[in-house]
Image: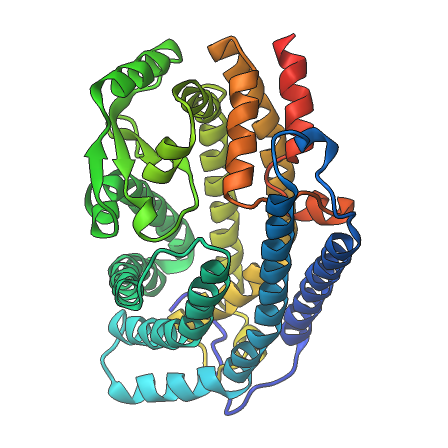
Amino acid sequence: MPGSGWVYDNKMEWNLFTWIFLAFLATRFALESTLDILQARYLSRRPDRVPSHLEGVVEIETIRKAMSYNRDKLRFRFVSRIVDMAPLWAMVLFGFAFIDRAVLHVEIGQPWSGLLFFGILGVLGFLWNLPSDAYYTFVIEEKHGFNKQRPGGFVTDKLKGLAVAAVVGAVLGSVVLLMMKHAGTLWWLFAFAAVTILQLLITWIYPVLIMPLFNKFEPVEADLADDVARLARSVDFPLRKVVTMDGSKRSSHSNAFFTGLRGARRIVLYDTLMSSLERSQLLAVLAHELGHFKLGHVTRRIVMTVVLMLAVFAVMGGLGGQGDVYTGLGFERSSEHGLVVVFGLLASEMLFPFGWVSRVLSRRDERAADRFAVEATGDGEDLVGALTALTKQNLGSPGSHRLYRAYHNTHPTLRERMKTIRGYAR
């Protein structure tokens, strides 16, 4: 086991780590709930009219549908945030200790006992989230005309996702637990290196082995593939394949993305996207996505993630010998898997400010990618038209409270993007 001073108490103790966790949890809950309330009030008081930047393009009925959809999503998220507190505190107060005692009695040793513990938590989380996921899909998305999935397909997808998570989690969990047990005081450094390598490997195989488990991929028509290939060559994007994905079998939402590491780069287009945009608009959207690659946004995000993960592992290594961190968050004894869980709880709350910083940087990157797309295509109206069409199709919110969007938005508002894109095109 890493570190020293490992303790075995018989009950949870409210100590410094409990109060740190509670303080960050309460701060995040209060902040995000307040912002949701501000956004709900903003939407309820918004004039019943088409915003000036969408006049002549979007009908008032679409705006009303978008308002209703976004209010429903806000209510769902607010209620879900409250409901999810119950299992969290149930686990901290007695659940972790109960499961840990059961695992201890099996006497199978690490990493198997730790994997069993993680597996039980994973199944419990899966079962707890299943009703809310079903409600969101078959009530909210169905109500607003987005859901195309049937219950059988929904269950199949969930079971496939659980199986993939079990396999990936078992591999990563085994590596971390074995490093903690056998790699000495610098276990965290070896674990970090191994997990980083494994995650890069998963990123490489994801489009080839995992994505086809959930969706059907087919090559796009030849003339579109040629247009995309020319665009990719113009920005030195190592394109291997352009495919369309049958996203319409689950939802009428649209999207496009690229995936894979160098040598396995794919551009993936939702079939719903291809049916809703003109060819020039579609190429403008792809130019925007390729701008993230060309401008180094993807590489920078990977580097930032790796650096943050290194810091997380280093801090976790330092906490391993602190007995209070276990008893303060629901464990009766210290263990390798217990350290992963309690540090995961602390990190999930204490790192939420980094999420906000990431979203601020994301908005900056989106502006840069918009400018890149305008320069690559020589026209800003195609990108404006595409963004407007996608906002209309996806019932994007026609407005937001300034504090809400400052905290939550990963993209500038449509009004802001239309203004800056047209400014770039001059």
